[in-house]
Length: 189
Image 1 (cartoon, rainbow, N blue to C red):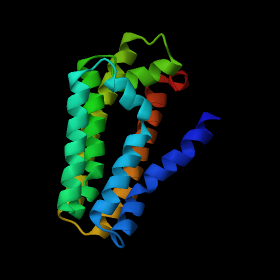
Image 2: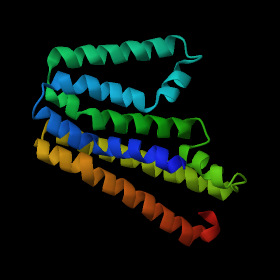
Image 3: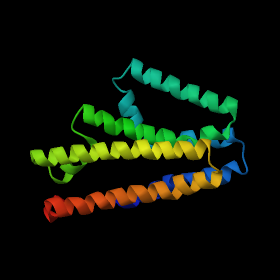
Image 4: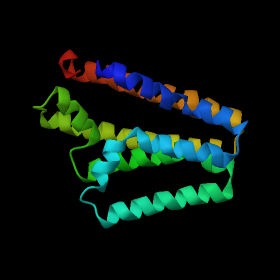
């Protein structure tokens, strides 16, 4: 049942590159940027509020930085800022995954413990390594997203950020799942 709730939202966010691509053909970049920012912030309101609670000055600085970005987007009206949102999303994911390596448990270990709460030490080491691999993916994916935003055509931008990057993520998920089943057996899935 929860999947049915998540699926439409997931499809909306997967479609964002296409929506941005078509919107930029008919609207000013600032008219695309503000709804995009609002949509991205609305994506995880609970996480934003949880982050802000108990963070005091850090939360205030983050809110100030977000407002500065909005002001910059509005003032510059440059489409490259709108096209850069996949870069920021990869940087955000890299930050989350890398921070979990510095302050364990890692993101992948947390996910794995949902299904296997009594994970052995070799499982913890494995999930840590997978988290490191995902960090590398976010660096590479963000770098390619930057190239598409700054140096490629919008058609290449939408092709990579709206299709190829999702296919690569899916291949990583599937490849890791297959490797884990081979390495640890079917009970590890």
